[in-house]
Amino acid sequence: MSDNERPTGLAIINAIRAQRELRGASDRTNLNDTLVKSARWKENTLGAIASGPSGDNDDAANPEERRLSTTLRRSSEEIERLKKIIAKLKAENDRLAVQRQEELGAHETELSEFQAAYDQFQQQSDILINELDQENERLRLACKLNNRQSIL
Image (cartoon, rainbow, N blue to C red; front, side, top):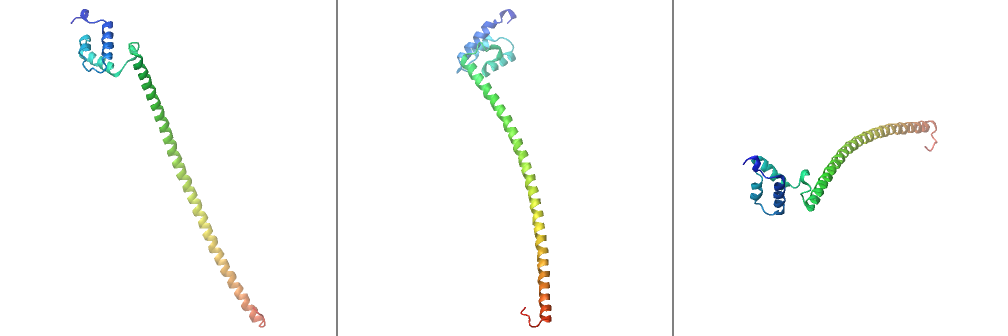
């Protein structure tokens, strides 16, 4: 077929509209007959028709398709926005978890130091009490020896 025999743009648009009106029908022979360009061009055009209206022919799309397309686009944008928010929240959660672990480690170290200081204090106080008990006992004995009449 020569260039002079190719259908006009209006014929192609009409064929596309007719194809859209036949939504449930899978037979594209009518449209294939109209699209007489290369096989790849036909395949691309049929794929574009099947996927919905493009920016070039929004006027040809019916209002329901435009509304659904807009809704789908908005939903996709919202999903992407929410994915970004989730990623930020996960990163913040990870950062806070690391910070919490560091703080817990610092508290554990501090508690260990307090426990060690308390244990040392307890040992020293036990030693001091023992020394005082021994000194007290020595003083009692000395007192008894110096004063036999003492009631100690």
